[in-house]
Image 1 (tube, rainbow, N blue to C red):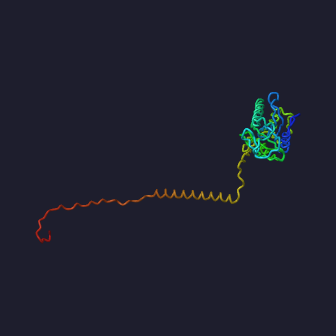
Image 2 (cartoon, one colour; image 1 turned 30 degrees about the vertical axis):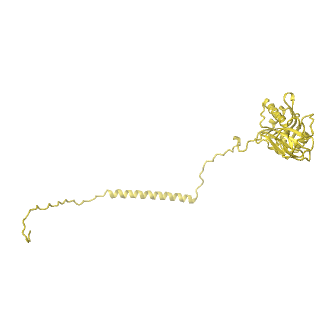
Length: 295
């Protein structure tokens, strides 16, 4: 991680511990410590961390004495177990101050026609080394978290800075340089430093999206040219021709036979006779005697 501390900045013990934590991270990010924004630089911000996925504004608070226990930030007064958290500048609410700093950074970039993207806020509580404060990370509301970290216990802060934004890697080298100039970073990091830290020179293509230039060019299909025929192919071709000719001859022979048979003299057909059934004789009534044989 690339860390830039403003020239002439007077850091507190908690801020120096925070800087040591950042310098131990292998993550890609630019951390600007003690940033002055607003009208004539009247708004002092403890740290602004620009990552490839967005911006995190940090409010850093140390402890006035060694405290260990369960952190509770749900009420007006933050507590460690049952005792109030004895943190630096306890007369001011760290959440309210952090929201003002987040607004100042976003407004500064927007007034200079820069797209701020995702700007989140985090209160970094730095206990004394050896003290144990849990949980190491608490979410107050979306975009506003509290992280406990020191050099001995800095894992949760690293996880937060590496994944606080779920967006794509949109902060390129030129965009980071422009934002650093707008925010008045002193000194402004060079392009070579940002490239060496891992920032992209151009915005990478989102996963699953293919640019037109990246589409593979399909080569044209070559024209089909028949190759030389083998002997088997030649024999098969001639066999098909012979079968076709024989079939045609058979068809011609059948047609000719039918035509010849139909042209012969059919002969004399037998004459048809008409027979007439004779009508029965006229019935004549006769008087017959009993036992007459001829009646």
